[in-house]
Image (cartoon, rainbow, N blue to C red; front, side, top):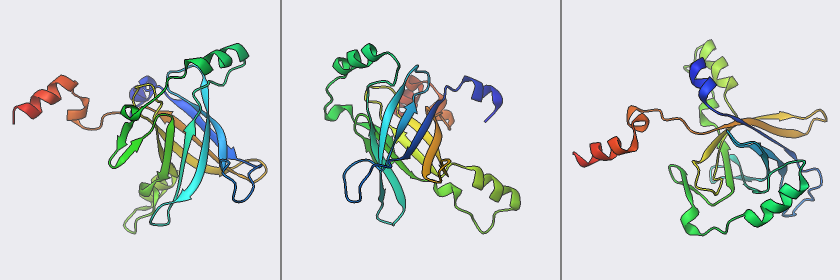
Length: 190
């Protein structure tokens, strides 16, 4: 990505820490923290639960709370009444075989970080810098699905912490970059 693209792409922060109060077997989240949505002023609370997929790989699923984190208590209270009621039509396609409910977040291990035998030293170093997990978030307000690059680490006490950066997915192909009307016309002309 070039510097000019990076400068125009709004980004937000993501940080969650291990829930120290979680008792074994309880339904409380494994991680709690906050997520900043690109181009928006306030961060939102987020809760994540750890799990394993059918292949034994670690993943996280959770939800956002639509009440923004702010010092203005009245604004927080007011936002409680502004939260819309959602139905099945508010689901968001977040990628192949992935549909998210409103306020849902799902994070999967980054397969492209895994080393490949044919990697050069430079390629291996590049892979090591990639996020440990990729997440998708449905904000529940009709806006595009947000992507999150997440790196695993430790806090100052040695407990797990997940940090990252949020952004809106950028088109990667010429067809995705073209205005929607042109894509429709191109499909219809076949």
